[in-house]
Image (cartoon, rainbow, N blue to C red; front, side, top):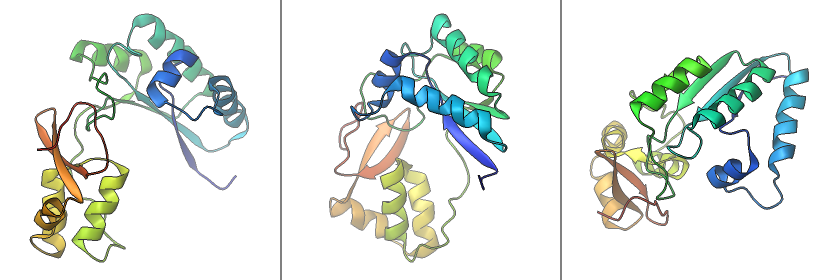
Length: 193
């Protein structure tokens, strides 16, 4: 294999929680996914990094976290990242765990804390306009309004206002931040602003 690093998401060790969190296509089965990860880890010679997304009351009880730790230990990841839903979620039942649960998870998994909104500029090489950059990034994940304004400033003014007034994008609020999302996307905790 030509890759040096592979990043895997592992958020649970049981099928019910896997289906609740990921809502996979009916042809995707938890057991096959887990076995695929184990088989891959056995032959891959590069680094495996693991991301763990914590969702309050879904995969944050002691039993689930310890079972997940046991599974993760089998693949010997070079890095582990503990994450929470810092952007607007698609489902209304998705909530950030308490700081105490996050600290417990960081202690258990020995991971790097990725539980705060990211900072810094987006790489914009390859985009020809603010409109193209903002729309493409928003289709991957919600974009903080301040980040969208920074992108706009690199290209041309009033682009974001035009995208909002034309109905291509809308603003939603989550965790005291405003985000820009494609209008056709539905987010569980938000309504159009």
